[in-house]
Structures are given as structure tokens and as C-alpha cells.
Length: 351
Image 1 (tube, helix red, strand yellow):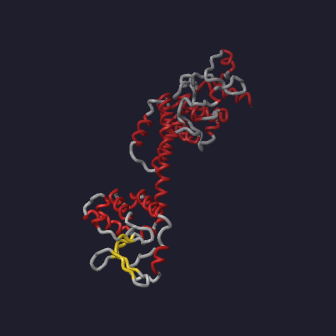
Image 2: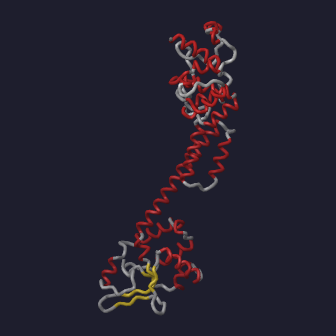
Image 3: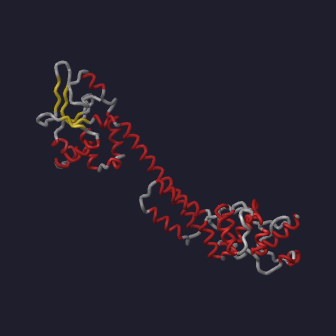
């Protein structure tokens, strides 16, 4: 760019004009980029107004130096005092957007030789124009970040509305909405979206219930949750006809769950600890397991994990099914003892 140094140019006036941007749009594109990215450089709206006024004094083909007096610039801004203008100019100089070329008497003007060489005294905006690529890239990055934050925020609000529809008493909804009142960064929005997704997975009434929730009546597969038939009771083996479900019976019948343990669980505490370990592996959020434990008891919640893992592919969505039988509408129908007995009978027939 021309006139970036206070020296006599050797290229003449025509070379000076060739360094001017192709159109005034280019100058104002740079201005808008800095305006949008002003927070990165610590600039306030007043600084931007000052820069806008200074750019308006540039004339096509006359270089990038502002020759207007401080009084003229103040009037074009709207009547700010000269002290404020000097502070704004000093700030732009500190940031490297403006360079002062002062004359001996502090006046701003240009002198030319008979050969066309020039010396310009004034406020050079060449450094600003030279950083066009940097400013446009920063402004574009900030715009992309803004759009991404809006996009993720809308996703969170949609999922919160879904949660509120199916579980209005969920305390997570209020916490999430409080967080959304603040201006969050993109990583914070994404973290909140991940938490909201996890909470949605624990819904008891999914829009498309898993097929496995309707357990078949075929003897070759698992029975329904309620075993009320007298004929079925007569078919049960006498070895598993006890009223209370024993830990050893659960671990022997549900061998799929015990296969993931280095030592066979010996009591209900061991079973609960192992179930708590298995739950995340099955797509069941730890908070959902704790809610189920408080709702139906640690023993029943742990049995659900063992039984579901034994059923395997017969259950399409472990998270939704677990919520349904421990916290949802089917929690009163869920009978671990009856299911373990039926699984034991099925295993014996297979053998």
C-alpha cells in the first residue's frame, strides 16, 4: 500500500493510485469485518463510529491517508469532543490499524514534487487495509460460532420441550432452562446438549416403543411380566418355587450378567454393585439407575439389569425398557421372581 512510510516515493502518482482497492466496497467490507469482530480487539461502538468517519474522508485514487482535521472528524462523527477522538485514534494506533505521519507543525496535508513524488502527513489507514484477510477471517469465524450456538440452543430447547411433555416434574428441565438464561459458549452449549440427550434417553414413554416391550406368549421365548396361569405354575420346577428370589438363583439363571464379573456376586450388595457397573454399558444413565433404585428398591432394579441382559436381543432399547419396568407404567407389573423362574425353565428345556 502507498504512503505507509514517511518517505519520498519514487513511483509517482499513478503508482499510488494503483494501490487503492478496486472499489469502495472493499474498504467498507474491511470496516464491517472489524465492526463485527470488535470484541476480539476490545473496541467499543464509539471506536467504530470514529473509524467509520475517518474512512468517509478517503477519496478514490488519493491514497489511504486521512488529511481531515480533528475538528472535521469530530463534526462528522456527531459532535464528540476532541479528547475522546484522540483516545480513539490512540487505541487504533496501539492495535496497529492506524499509523501517524506527523508534520513539523502537526498539520495534515500532502506535498508533491514536479516529478510526481509525494509526501503525505496525516493518519494512514494502510495498516488496516493490509490486515483485511485477518479481519475478514476473524469476523467469519465469529459468525460461524454465533450460528452454531443458535443451532445447538434450538436443539436443546426442542429436547427440553419433549422432556417437559413426558416428564413435567423432571428437575433437570429447570436446571437446563436456568443455564440457558446465560450467554454460553459453544462448548458449554454442546455439553448441555449432551446432558439433555442423556436425560431424554431415560424417558418412560418413547414415541416409538420398543417391540420387545410386548413379550411373546410362545413357550420358546420369555413370558409376559405376569404369570397368573395355574398351568404355568404347575410347570415350574420345584427347585425354583421359593417365594423369595435368592441371589444365587439370580446369578445362576442370568449367567450373561455374571460373565462380565471377575468374581461371582455372592449377595445382594455384590449384585447391586455389578448392576450399577453394567447399566452404562447397556445405555442406561447412572442417574436413571439411581432413580429406579429409589422407586422400586435396589434389589428389584438390580434384577432388572440382570434379566434384561439375559434376554439380550429380544429387547431393542435397554434404556427405554428399563425405565418402563422400574419407573414407568409397568413397574407394578414387573415381577423379577416370575421372570427368573421362566428363564430357568427355558434354560432347562434348551438343555
